Length: 93
Image (cartoon, rainbow, N blue to C red; front, side, top):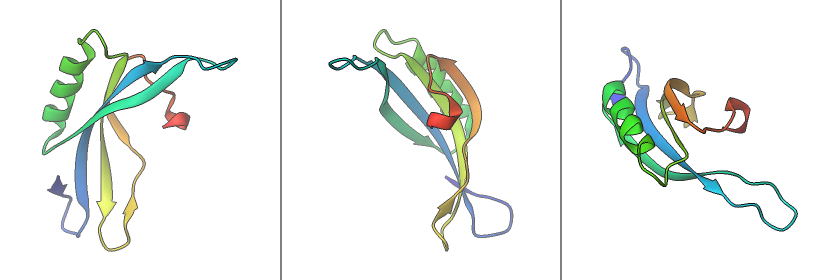
């Protein structure tokens, strides 16, 4: 996490992995979040996403950043650094 610009906002760099979720009775298979890691830089988050995506049990991985305003608690929409493998559509994020 780093401070963004000269304001009090903070930037969070996240690697998030997904696993395939088996279909329930009459349902559809899908994805679910498996792991989340936070890093100090975009490069670190991207490297972890690339490494995690190579694992046999990983369906896909995202590396993204969000900007947080600690005063209001608001968090921006994610800006994706890299999306690898089978990942959910942005609307489902």
